[in-house]
Length: 564
Image 1 (tube, rainbow, N blue to C red):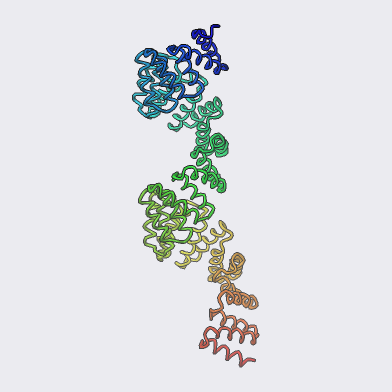
Image 2: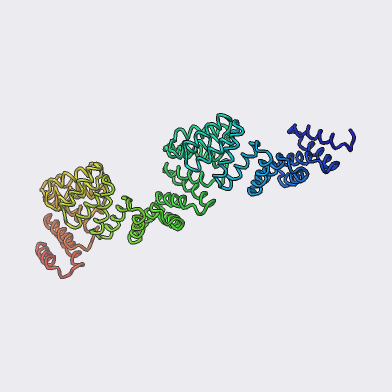
C-alpha cells in the first residue's frame, strides 16, 4: 500500500469501523487518512463516529465540526454532532444541530427522533411530541419513537393513549425493557396494580439491573399488603442502587407495616441521610420510634417532618399523640388542634384531642371534641366510651350509660367500657345491673383488679359475703395495692365472724396507708372481739400517733385497759 494514499487508509479504516472489536485500529487508520488529506470530510465524520462510540464526546464534537466545516451539506454529520451534544446533556446545542440535519434531510427519522428526545429532556413536551410523531411517521418500525410518544402521553396524564403507544413499542421491540417498565407505571397510576406488576416483572426480566423497576415492583406489593414480596424487590432495588432514597424509604415503611420497628428505623434513617428534606420519611421514622414507645425520639423526628411540611396533618396528629403518651397534655392539645385545623375530617385527631381534655379534667371540652370524633366516625367505639366516661365524671349517668352502651355495641370486647358502665349503675344504686356489667368486664379481662374489687364491694353490699370474699381476694391477688379491697375484705370476714382473717386484712390496710385512723380503730375492735387486749391497745396507740386527740380511740383505749 502506498503510505501516502489517503483513500486506501480511509477505506481500510472504514472496514475496521464495521468490526466492533477493531475500533482502535479504525481510529489509527482514519487519523492517518485525515493527516494525509485534511480535506477528507468523510474521514473526519467516520473518525468522529469512532470517538462517539467510545463515549469520548469532546473529541467526537471536534471531528464532526471539522467534517461539517468541510461539507456543510452532510446531514449525517450534523445529526451525529447533535447526538454528541445530547450525550453531554447540552440540549440547546443538540437541538441546533438536529434541526440542521433534518433541514438537509427531511426523511431522516433518526434525527427527528433525537430532536424530539432533546425537547423531551428540556420538558418542552409539545415540541417533543411533534418530532416523535414525524419520526414514527417516517419509520413505522422505530420502537423508540413509539415508546417516547407513550411517555409523553403519560406525562400529560392521557393514560389510554400512553398504553397504546407503549404497546406498539414493545410489539416492535419485545426486548425494550424501558417501555415495559413505563407501561407498568401507567397501569400503577391507573391503580390497575396486577397489570402493573406483570409489566414491571417483564421489565426486570429483560433488564435485571433496572433498580427503578425493582423499586416499583416492591411498592406495588407494599400497596397489596404482600410485605414479604415488597421487601424482596425493594432490597434488590437498593442493592442495585444504594442511593435510591425512595426505595430505602419504602423498604423502611414495609418493615414498619410488619411491626419490625428496628429494621424500619434502620432503612428510614438511611433515607433521610441521603435526602434530609424527605418529610414523609422523617414522619415514618418518628412513627417507628412512637411504636417502640421511644417518645422523645418520636417527637424529634415528627418536629423535623412538620418543619419541612407544615401541611402534614398526620404528622401533627402523631406529634400530639407522642406528647399525650408523655402526659404532656397542653402540648398534645396544641398539636392535635393543628392537625384538625389542617384536616377537619380527621376523626382520630378529634378523639385524641377530646381525650387530652379528659385527662385535664376539662370534661365539657372533652365532650365537644369526642362528639365530633363520633360524628365523623360513627364506628369509633373508643370515642363513644370516652364520651360515656366524660358524662360519668359530670355525674350525668343516663347520658353516660347511653354512650357506654353504644361503645360496647360497636366493640363487644371492650372490657373497659363494660366496667365503667357497671360503675355508673353502681352510682345509680342499681346493683344487680352493675354486677352484670362487672362480671362481663372480668370475663373479657381476667386481670382487671379494679373490676374484681367493684364486684366484691357489690356482693358485700348484698350481704353475700362468700362471693364478696372471692372477688376481693382476686383483686388483691392481681394488685396488692388495690385501694379498698383489703378494707372490704376485712369487713366481709368480720361479718362472717372470721376475725383472724379480718385482722390480716386490716393490717394490710394499715400497710397501704398507716395514716388512716379508722383502720387502726377497727383493728383494735377486732382484737377486742378476740379478747387479745394487748394487741388491741397497741393498735389504738398506733392510731393515736396520727391524731392524739381522737376521742373514739381514747375511749376505746380506756375500755381496753379496764379489761386487762
